[in-house]
Image (cartoon, rainbow, N blue to C red; front, side, top):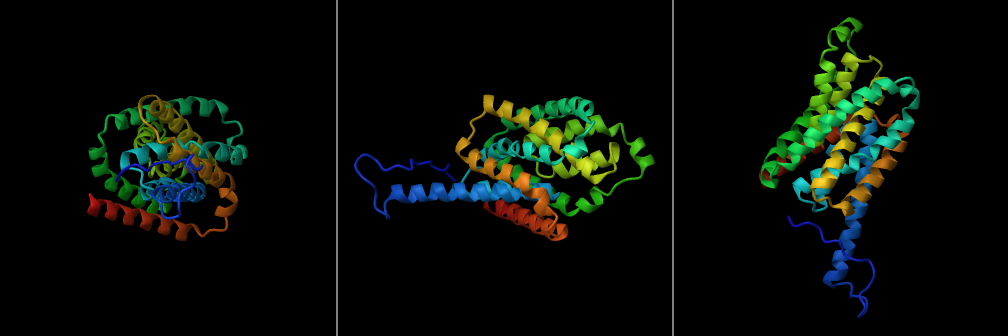
Length: 277
């Protein structure tokens, strides 16, 4: 599929085109894509706050808007950074006193995110297109298994698992820098297992680590990759809004229903990608 053409919203010097002209059609398509991405960003921010997988909303929306698979993944990684400020503000009580811990482990997450982006930069579009259905399926299955994955362990088992923390943060941050669907759920499970049995505090720490990994990835991609900033802008704006209001809205959404809807959408997307590939 060809990349979308972003057309100017003002009329050319020789006058405004007719409603049936290619210019007008392209202009309407571009605006419609922006609305789609902004709406998807809002929903993705809410879903991520509710404990789901952000990328299973935002990545399919990018494909639907006509962004090629590899470029859609780059755009998605860049836009997800917008979720960080909203989640940080909403989680201030849970993050109190965690400054030194976050400084140490956010650096580890940034190293992992950089490694994942380096791998992505050295992946050809064809190879990435072949692996995406498997990544989307894995993310969807992880979401369905989330209640089991994030079940709080006993204190004694958490103490015995602390050696997993550095390796787990590094590996999951690298995956987040490469694709990321499901990394949040797995990182939340790691926090519950090794750091804190409180779901709210573990989720807050997870959000900060993902933010650190994502920012490092964005720096790498901004320097070495071509980024469709026209697609990033509406998606990131929606994610910022969704992550800010998500905690309040998520309390009114049945988590089981939301989990199944998002997971089935992801599996449907994977099947579609397999068939079209």
